[in-house]
Image (cartoon, rainbow, N blue to C red; front, side):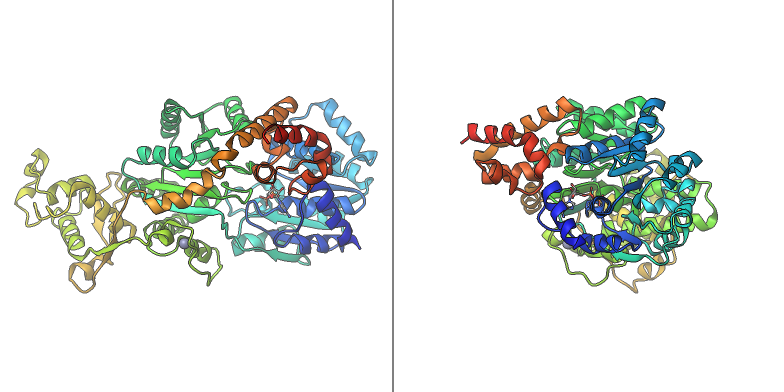
Length: 601
Ligand code: ADP
Ligand code: ZN
């Protein structure tokens, strides 16, 4: 019975036909009064899991979220659906906060978003004591974990909810997968009795491409210009300086590209984030400080111009692409220097020895992902504990299996050059020696008389750098800790030097044609003849959004506009059949969109 109601709400309020993934089961548990722990990938549809039960059950649904900056948008989006929603956090002035509290007491809210520190005040708790409550939703629940990257001490105090409101079902939601975090959420939030739902973490609509980046900036531009010439996207760089430079450079190429990093003041950061959310086709160039909880569903690409520190970071960052389920690209260019810089940063950091070991380990895994020659997705999912998946057909390695070559001899030459020069030199120097370039320094050290001097003519300078990168990534060389990037042999290098094992290396290649075709789908989804209508609908959406000061996707998603283009409905009833158009939106916007469609028939 209740589930019928839930289904009806899905249809009439949200305009969707079917539940996705575990939504149905999660909702059923909550409606039965059972606690839930839900692990779902980004874009999986976590919000519906608590919103719908909050509507079916009597009382208000309390949503705890650390993402204060996004609450306004979340509430705006719910209002667009005709729901009664509000938020309480430190950005509200006293009068507005009081108005929200009055609405809460009067039973005029379906959903209330609160920051954890706000919820834990005695004032709000005693207000809740006197308010009928439908449920508590604890979003971004991994924030309780001390080991995670988003630890919030207030989150650990949320156990008070279990004690104070034992009758009210609670749901904890996160997109962070690992076992340890999961256990911590359960114990910290007292969810021992909860039903646990874990979804596959696969993001099938994301195409993964990782390649080595000589001229990374040019490659980036070619990638953006070819596949995403007007799409919104995020470009991640390691340093603030690089962020600024890349943003300026993309702007010179004619794109709107805005920097985002911790060195900018809060106002500028906020303004850039707003533009990214509210305008079409803005590129944000950011350090990793950007993106937590960014709910923008139509980010069409995430590009990395540096190597992330771990697969967790990589997956989280790339996960911000394609939340709407439409094709999206995760693209990365990395280079030898990244490997060296990251290794040094970790060595120099003030972390404990144990933590450093963990970090090194994570970087190894990330490098392994970069250098592998088989399906990236299989490796990613395997890393997150999902074994036995099949090659995906939607990553660079699947689309064009990389060629490998017998690098044994080259590796031996490189390693003995390291050895003979005393394990005191960095890559550039070693390559010069291999190529027999007797510059002053080399002569000074007498290295022009070494047996390895000039024995590497069969490869060019950039090839040698690639070889060294792979040797480092594969653990045959380590980067010295002295800050100068000197390379040393490792345990692993000996059998290779002695000729007991052979080594396959991968050929680096520039972006290739087939990949282009595949990735193109992500950008150019519209047929040429549909282009004028598509443009008109986007313009209309933008105007309506701007009139109300909300992001365009809050009005309709791209996929909804796309269906309008393809189906060209002629009536409100026809429009209502399209996924993503509930009753409220049909009433409010239906006529305007029908007219736009009519004008293009
Ligand atoms: P998450 O919080 O898990 O990252 P969201 O709750 O923001 O994801 O949902 C991602 C997108 O998917 C949203 O735009 C949402 O409207 C849409 N969505 C959720 N559930 C469904 C469904 N059953 N059918 C179609 N679209 C859905
Ligand atoms: Zn694959």
